Image 1 (cartoon, one colour):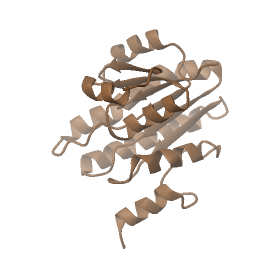
Image 2 (cartoon, rainbow, N blue to C red):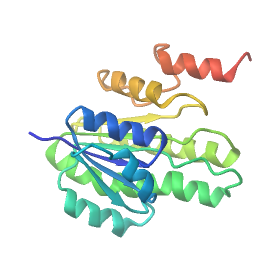
Image 3 (cartoon, rainbow, N blue to C red):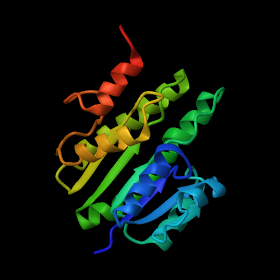
Image 4 (spheres, rainbow, N blue to C red):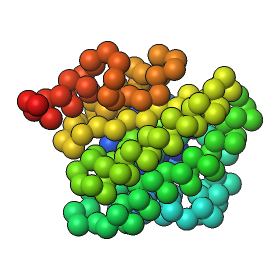
Length: 205
């Protein structure tokens, strides 16, 4: 069976890397972002990557994409680029409400099939607004994981510090998917590469 992944924030950073890794692993990848040029770079020489330009804060736009995509087996919601000086409203709208829109659209199909993976990568906590956004995103995923426990869908939320390489974030997420019940990828749990990187980034306390 062909597996389909929907990756938002796929034009740059950890979202682009997630899309490229999944495509290299023979997933059909639907890469979503507002940045058309960035999406083209993500999908370069990848025939199983399909790009869709979309603002994830628009629920109808997400519904239209899912109407073309069909069943989604893995959802990866990656953060947009850091925007210095963004207001709290802008940060929460893009980093939290956009993620909620996508999860709400994809989750019912996963629950109906009794299988799926929902992965949200919160924005780095580089400002009070982005810190609040990251906390809200992870709290939302925690609540969903509790509510839908035992229904076959795995939930993960990663909240890496600014500067942690995307490959470490994705490596840790992949490992966590083999550990049922571990919703939060960082912090907590065994001190894997991501948590060691977080500790180094934080410096001495």
